[in-house]
Image 1 (cartoon, rainbow, N blue to C red):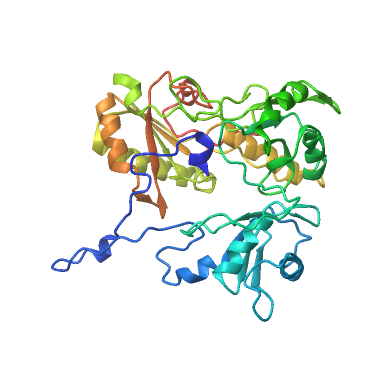
Image 2: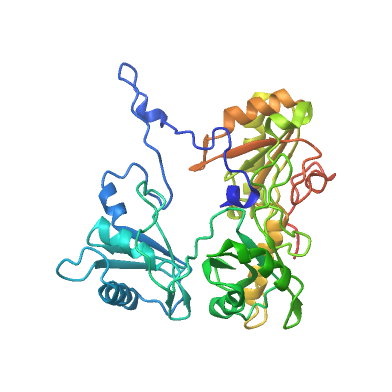
Amino acid sequence: MQAKQTGLFNLPGANRTQIPPILGIAGLPAPMPVQSFGMGIGGNPNLSRQSRRLYIGSITPEVTEQNLADFFNAKMEEMKIGTGGTGNPVLAVQCNYEKNYAFVEFRSAEDATAAMAFDGIIFINGPLKIRRPKDYSGDLASSVYVPGVVSTNVPDTINKVFVGGLPAYLNEEQVIELLKSFGELKAFNLVRENGTGASKGFAFFEYVDNSVTDVAIQSLNGMELGDRFLVVQRASVGKPGMPGMPNLPYDQFPEIPRPIMPAGENSGADARILLMLNMVTPEDLMDDQDYGDLYEDIKEECQNFGNVLDLRIPRPVKKDKKWAPGDGQIAAQDAARTDEANGVGRVYVKYDDAENAGQAMKGLAGRSFAGRSIIATVLSEDSQTSPPLHVIFAPQPDAPPPLPSS
């Protein structure tokens, strides 16, 4: 998720497979590496089960294992899709309310594939976001079309449109109703907070008829809606020489993660800042003693590749537990946004020259740290990042900084 938000996708070593040292026994042939996937499933021998499961994202507390199973069973019967065997197509449902997702297991892979057609169908208070599990390697889409269902998966194409400035109280159906005044929608996704499900005030969409896209953008952009003004534009317009880099209105909408331009070979001799993701978590950085130990461990490892001029590991904001009744959730959301804006979860290492930074990237990308696979790239000092590099490397005392107060 961190890598996706920063725009770092095809990183050197990001998908490197690690062979645990305990398996490297002298005299025996090296074991075949097995790709490890999300959801805690790595090298799962029962891959057939994954072909029968679907991931349902952004569920609400009103969604239960029973009513979700009943909904799929009834809809598949109504639409006459799936294998049509005896009994119900859904075998089991598992809901994780803490992380707002569910898994639905079907009696066959064919039934699961058919049920992918319901991605975007309205259930209780909003659309179901249906995806394959992360370790599924077969066909991702369904060949079945369900009339009136708008997919929640908006692909990154020239026809993907961004709409921001949406009042937080609008739900999917209300925003879709506005957008459909210009044509039928092929896909739509209202972006919501992971923990609370609250609208972030922006969405992405695509029309069935691409010829209406420009008309809709011109008509909707600047429209007053409630006490806000809409910002509407194509989401995947690449910058010159940077195909695929989004051109989104970050200044108006700071909550949209700003991509970090991968420096790589285009950075010249000045790409001497190593950026690492997935190495630390906010929880690792809360305690001063733990932070100090972590800081020294990372610095020692990074010095194996060259002279380290500076190392910065942004720390999370202190969480004030004395919130007024009902304010705790809001304060927690504000703290999370502040942490993200400050670069918490990233590690910045400044080397004395670009060659050492490049060697460090090759040596550390894909390595396991505290059970997580490190993702890394190099940046030059003038790379456009959020937060800016001059803020990250601002002067500070020699001692590890204390947690910033809220």
